[in-house]
Length: 130
Image (tube, rainbow, N blue to C red; front, side, top):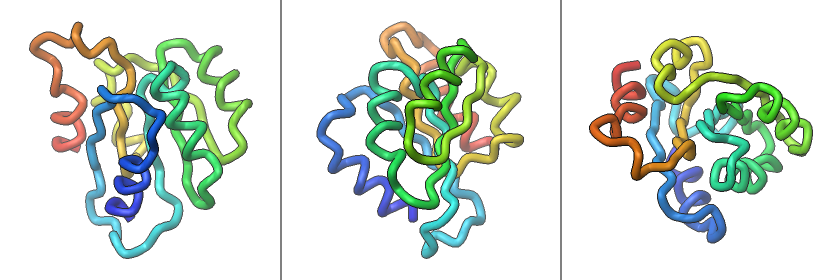
């Protein structure tokens, strides 16, 4: 499942560069493609929103749209055709939410990436620790 999704993401021409993807597969049977949860940090922004729009029509895919503004996340989810839920927290607080949300894949599109400083790998490190 993760290989298929990553190939789909790689073939998607319009999401832009600079989106970090961290896989948090755990013990999932990777031969099955159903009920996959993707947490998109910055999910209603320019890159995250475009990615969500491109993925929302895939059956059995559950998008978890996350950003700091619950109103924007809620409004954006209402525009998507697939199954999406909205969540409000900062990427710095991912460790507090990742076990509850239990995503199979985390995409960090929150940016701006040049401002991450020494914490540039914090999302990836959180996924590995989970």
